[in-house]
Amino acid sequence: MANKEASVAELTNLFESSTAVLLTEYRGLTVAQLKQLRNTIRQDASYAVVKNTLTKIAANNAGISTLDEGLTGPSAVAFVHGDFVATAKAVRDFAKANPNLVIKGGVFEGKSLDADEVNKYASLESREVLLAKAAGMMKATMGKAAATIDALREKLETAEAA
Image 1: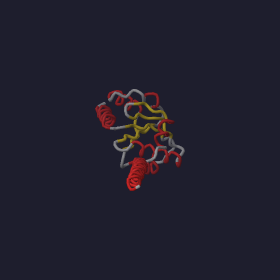
Image 2 (image 1 turned 45 degrees about the vertical axis):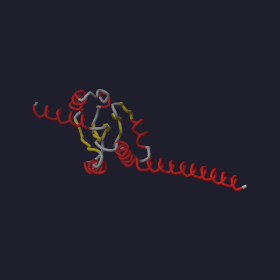
Image 3 (image 1 turned 135 degrees about the horizontal axis):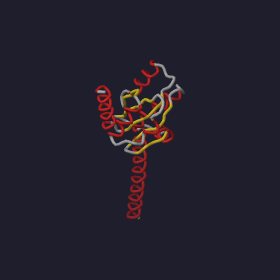
Image 4 (image 1 turned 180 degrees about the vertical axis):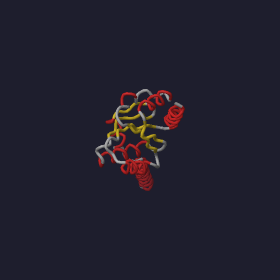
């Protein structure tokens, strides 16, 4: 009993300290494959095989009740403490390579996500790429503005000289 209470307290702490949570089913994966997945997402998340009943209690203690439906069968949870999109992308890519891993859903910014929504987040480009595109658009806009202002200056100088 004390062991279960400690597990619930630890899971509750993980739910509360995570920016997002991904719920998966790992039926049919080997220990080596689970280790590979953990290593893939280690930078942004931790991945834990969990007991459904204890996880429901811990999630509810943390104020998350939307995972209750998905906690059936062999479940594992990715507790995201870094970049959610990178973690979702890594889990999705791993699931493509290992069809036994099933993404059931998750929670991000307090909003419940189904598997399709997790895949939509996973298809986003990385933060660095999006920032580079935004910087490129700003540079192009500033370049056009500078060219317009310079053309106006030349026009005024030509008009004054005439």
